[in-house]
Length: 211
Image 1: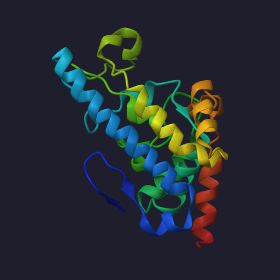
Image 2: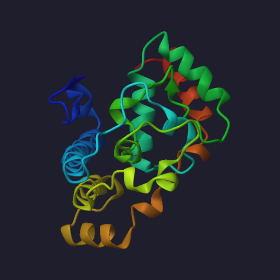
Image 3: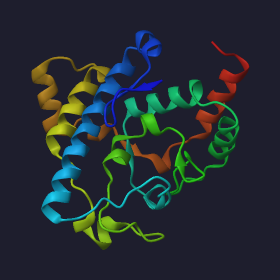
Image 4: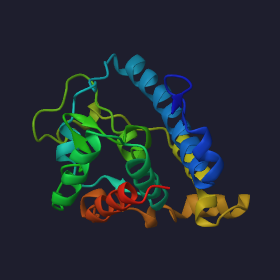
């Protein structure tokens, strides 16, 4: 795995040759990350505010109830967890996935860090807070909306356009219609209601029968 620049895509060259959906996901995430850098700089300049999010800050990972995940993102998380996460983190994650209750806490949060960080969902990437870190249990979207970054829609739409071939939509006109109509949004579901036990079982299967 390599990361080409601070905000650019993670790269898995061998896997991308074998998995046609993987470049779509990574290219889309690069666009989203690039848009975030742009939006954060603009917000800091206009609002004279400093980004509060930093390594080890995990309140949103434990308190958010409505983080959406799209089918392609689910495929990416399954792949990364099954094939890329090694020991001893792997065993800890499997146990956590098996015990996961359908609640707000993210099942991939271990020791204040995201275990699937390179392929974390777009919604996680886009949730950024300014001025001060979130208080325990706080959802700043409701307590101080002015401190929550509003991502730039053009980057989100561009990223979605890159993802659409995974859903069988390749024509430019069809892509435009799908984005405007919210077709992709209709495919998303909250992470908290997903059955992550199946992923733990898939990881076990891979461990006993690696490719």
